[in-house]
Image 1 (tube, one colour):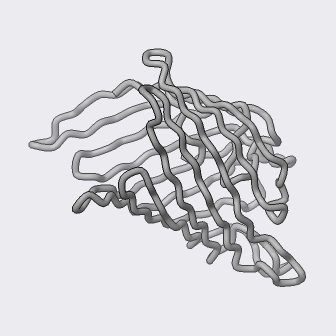
Image 2 (cartoon, helix red, strand yellow):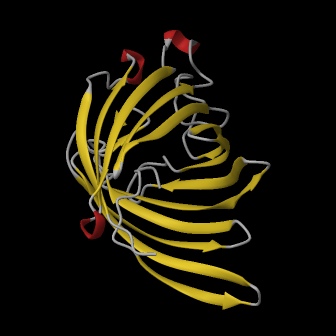
Amino acid sequence: MKLKKTALALSVLVAAGSAAAEFSANIGATSNYVWRGVTQTDDSAAISGGLDYAHDSGFYAGTWASNVDFGDDTNAEVDLYGGFSNEVSGIGYDVGVIYYGYPGGDDINFLEIQGSLTFGPVTGGVNYIVDSQVDDTSAGNETFIDGDIYYHVSASFEVAPTWTVGGTVGYFDFKDDGVAGSDTSYTHYQLDIGKSAGDLGDFTFSVSAADEESGDSDAKVFVSWAKTFE
């Protein structure tokens, strides 16, 4: 889920009264798994895959997994998510929950609630950590703890047939910022150029940068691939 889905998907439509539901499976690849401006793979490649369910009512649920490298025993991420998305008077909305699990990690799993609005090409949203295994009682400057908030605004435009250009600005507001001399909250920026190659899938070229407070301020240049069948 954290990685823009680069997918090989298999989907099937199932009738449910007058409504329809779609199940899909996906796989993906990227030269660098970058999440909110910070590499999750020590600037190395990642392969991901997931399962999704979407209902015509707007309800959705799924799971997604990828390799990660945090420099310790953590080598995988497994996410679970669900929510509801729809549109009212031309404004799209999405509310849901995301659980980030790290098998082998040392108590670093956490749960976010999220909400976003979309109007035309622009989307803005907020993610709020409501339940985290991270212990914030020791140093007093921990990140990814209860109360941390992530804000984001993005836009995507079709500039030519099969070509898109998009950008994202995000701000991670860590609750313990400034405590015990810490300075952890940061802003990040990302530019994406996308190319749809039909049956060969979708390719994205991305450039990402984050403030030095992120601990990963080097600019990232990476490519991703996606393929879906719906």
